[in-house]
Image (cartoon, rainbow, N blue to C red; front, top):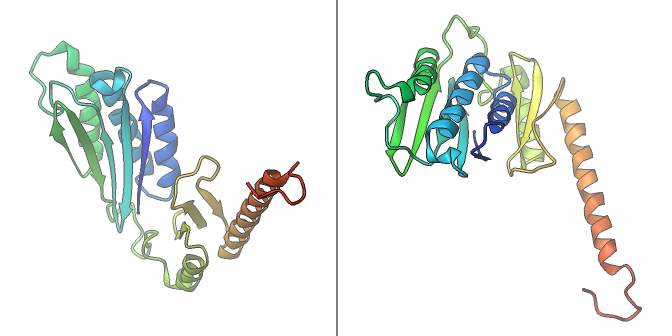
Length: 224
């Protein structure tokens, strides 16, 4: 699964990046480390690239199997990350953030040039942090495979999965929406009822909007 979101290049957006990543990876054993690294990448983009000068940056999160990846695309800067000149006072703060990235992630790097770069980090849970029998969301446990298949079939507009570390069922809309976000329930049935209710609400809103189009129209007048 992969998600991407665009943020304005302002300091207050670091908090939004934290929330965005934490919601998506709430069930990952390295969630705290990944959120911290995402915040450092966002801060670096805002303070040390063109993104922070009335620009924007993108944050992309992906999770497949045991591998989670976070990447931030910025507006570019004259000096590449991970290649700071010794003794450069200007970039010491950025260096500290990138040191955190290198220390916490399994691998990290940067692609691009002064016109724009993507700085990324990958995370692979170790056997010490993942129980031997645990499965990640893309590989449902046998006991939940039937429920996972049912949810996937009935709610095609949503990513749905079971999180073994939280013991919760999760759903995330495939198409970004300002009103819909990550939701969780304790059972597959409860999640299905929640999604059904959201669908009913959406139909009611559509019906009300449709009726408003005809309000005040004279009998026999053409439909708008």
